[in-house]
Length: 103
Image (cartoon, rainbow, N blue to C red):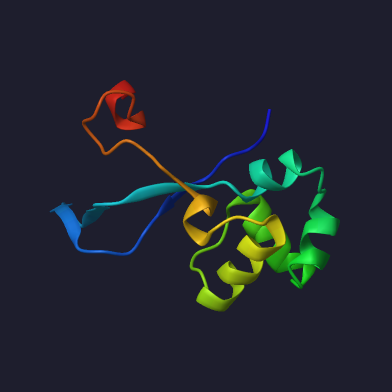
């Protein structure tokens, strides 16, 4: 089973509750899924996107704290997709299927 990571995108906060900020847009980075569908492993993906191995791992496992627009464009080009294809929208808190609904 592939690992997936929830990425919280920057934008105006939906709410602030007790110091906890909930952002309006939530996305999952799909780099590993897209790369594997094209038969690429992490090393080949990193080389094709011209990334340092640590950066390639961050995109592959979705562990990055932020994104650089130039790097996102190289990653998308390496996978032959648009930058928007690198992300999948997740349900908002309170929507059916949201992880917060199961708490």
